[in-house]
Structure formats: structure tokens, C-alpha cells
Length: 136
Image (cartoon, rainbow, N blue to C red; front, side, top):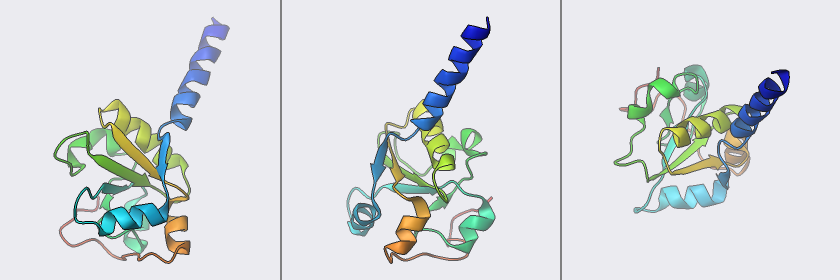
């Protein structure tokens, strides 16, 4: 019995760590966001206060703890569209990627280096809530 439980824990940890197997670097994401076609949806999975303190332009705030209950708020036409997730340094984005893939989103990307790499590359950050976007 203990062996079975240990195996279950190992499998859950493996699923968590591979939540977002695919990644995108900040330069590639910036280029895709600048393009008029095939712009990915960007989801900031940090807390609302972290989001207001600085986030990627156009990013939607859905904290990771609320994501399983707010999947319908991910602004896509269908779940085959690209969704990029990021957090402060990785674990929350990995978990968010797992949640999104389990909900049927097929193209989930994790921003390599998260918001830190975006900032260090000199890409713009927006402070305060994004106009028209709800922060909870």
C-alpha cells in the first residue's frame, strides 16, 4: 500500500513539473505580440497585487489558485489557440500550464525566465490594472 501511495505522489510531482513542457523566450513572445495575426493570449498567474505592480502589456490576471474555477475567463475563441503563462519565477506557471492542459487547452507555453526575463530584456511592463481587464 505504501509503495502504491509513493508511486502516486511521484506521478503527481512529475505531472506538476511538466505542466508547461513547451516554452517561449521573451524575444519571441515580444515579436508574436507585435504581430497583428496569431497573437497569443498572455495570462499572469501571480496574485492581483503582483499584477498591478507590473505585468506584460495585455496580460490577463488570473491567479493560479483561482484558475481551475475561472477557465472560462481565459480570453480565447477556442482552446487550440496559444496561451502563454508566466509568474514570478516558475512554479505557479508550471501548475497553471498543467491546469490549462487538463482543461483542454492544447497550445500552452511558459515564458522562459518568467517576468524577470521579460524585464531584464528591456521589454515594457504596465503598472496598475489593464484598461477593461478585471483583476481579482
